[in-house]
Image (cartoon, rainbow, N blue to C red; front, top):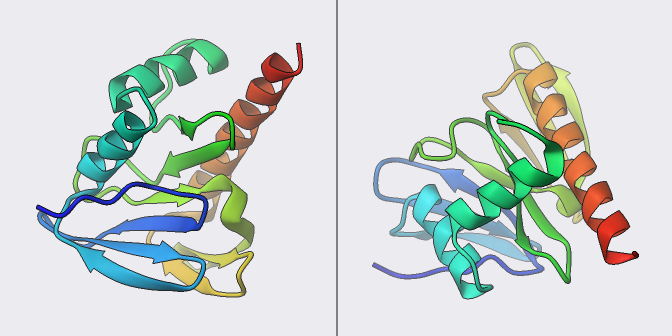
Length: 149
């Protein structure tokens, strides 16, 4: 299995099936033979923790148990990703908070516009996506406050 670590140019990790994911970066996209939960965990481990450790950290920052919790992949560069569904599911896609420009409703889906000028229609309700963005933004705000103390 090929490894992929999330980096500053990673925009999204899109679940394709039970074996593959599509990686979208600032300058293009490609397919890897790895499911999204494994990519997230590998990336957390690359930066010195694990998905579970990062999840517990987010829970601590945000207070209580949070379904579909955003996580800090790497804190010094504020790489924060949020999921579209259950993080343990190979059908869950993840997005970089700092790469989202804006988003809009399209019937039952959401169109996400990224800062690099690309867009993607995702099978998630607008309100659910907005809730995820707000949680991730709150996590980013708390991280910045604690770094500045």
